[in-house]
Image (cartoon, rainbow, N blue to C red; front, side):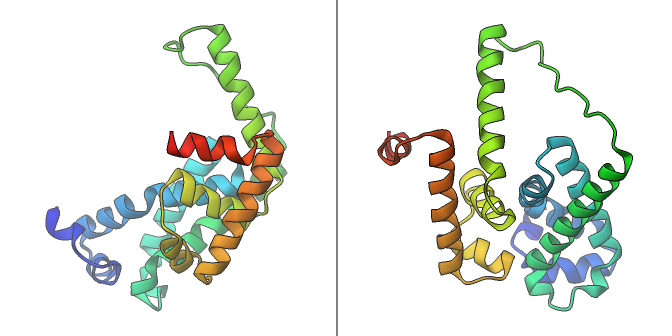
Length: 191
């Protein structure tokens, strides 16, 4: 498998097109976290994000020949993820079913900690709601997944400066929503 990790996206796409399941497996490993993050930025729910990412991988595998520039597989694939996520939301709206309540795992330390985490999650979800979809994608890919500005720019097909701008504005809005002073955020990063 080490040989596959050294291959470019274009080489992996070519091998996958020829039926090499290990090559496609490497693409899955390479993009699964990004797919989840992008799907989560659209769906805003863990379960839906997982479903959308899985559907996107299946769609990408069956449509590899449609990837005109295999070297830019990431951008092409993340577009599929966004579209599958939006489709999933449309299907869910049609069903109009009640959401399944989130259950607490038994390994949680206690009700107080669980309540704290739930409050933090709710505050974070609410703060993410004020961001545009692109801002959510950029902040999740950069801050959660650790992608560099250049990588995000390539994958989302936008200039690196635009990525930096979206990230700056997204963080500013998140600080305002979560009432975090800019210096406190900086101390958290360096401390």
